[in-house]
Length: 91
Image 1 (spheres, one colour):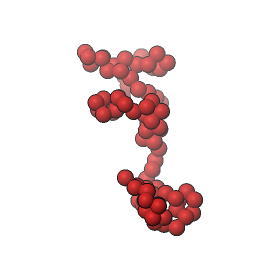
Image 2 (image 1 turned 45 degrees about the horizontal axis):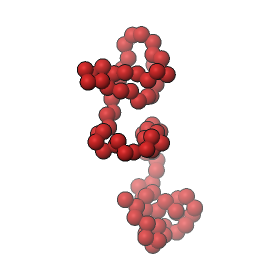
Image 3 (image 1 turned 90 degrees about the vertical axis):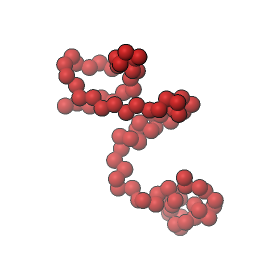
């Protein structure tokens, strides 16, 4: 089974319109739908959506639980807690 990831348009009648550059063979396909709340995402730049899609496809299970609070430690080798000391809000 091959996997293809793309963003499609759902029409008012429930029909899903594939992007012009997506070619699928006729027949059955397993479909998983993740639909964003359009009221909250309409101001998000397209590059941010693309990065979010990319991140969703990555396995992040091996990342440390405190990565947000100590990103300088993991990126640059700084002491843990330095991000908080610099007033960086990890949320």
